[in-house]
Image 1 (spheres, rainbow, N blue to C red):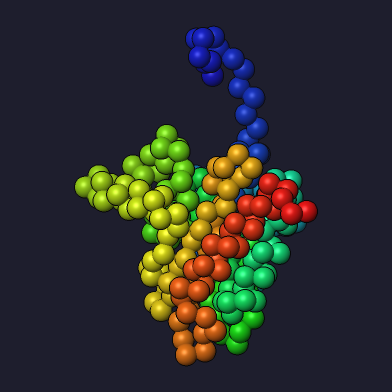
Image 2 (cartoon, one colour):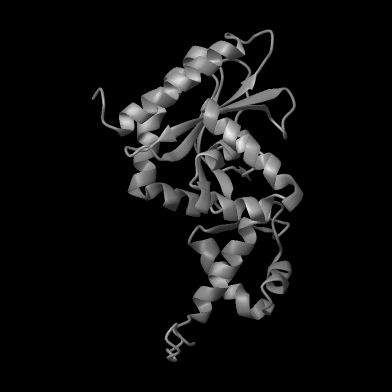
Length: 256
């Protein structure tokens, strides 16, 4: 290995660790699970080379193996570890009271999401108190530009941070249109759009700001319009905006 100064430095790679990380990264992108043989082929190693690594990861709770199919899946261990991180845990704890009050008032579910490595990750969820509602589980991930939440987060991301994800995700011919849409979101302060994946749902996404004003998360209400809905979408929009402001106040330590 050669560093930036052109000086050769020792290779401190750990093969066993490389194998474990390769497997975790592979299964993170697999929705249907993979067999031992499929994993070995995908990471370009023999079954014998990865078997003990899989056994260890399963024993430590990072993977689980479905029986009798033998398919390996990624567990929620990494998600749980991320939530032990103090900033993440603190954000969730400060947001939950306002989210509970919001969902109770509007009779709809709500969720809190962040941008992580080119995807939207749901970090907290409050179920609808009504007999009906749309639920998004904590830990679920969504594309950045194909979801109202992701577009809202990207709209308030610094241009230097957002541009690489835009170039990676959006065809060149469509980038100007997306940039215009992001500008509109910034101007109105939130995103509202029919869910592209779930017909009959309108996503309302509002920014959650840190102490210094940066947008660090999104509060989203997947609004389900039925004859049983307690509140019309206009009132839900106002309530969600008020809840987002309450979370920002909690982050700033106001009213405590």
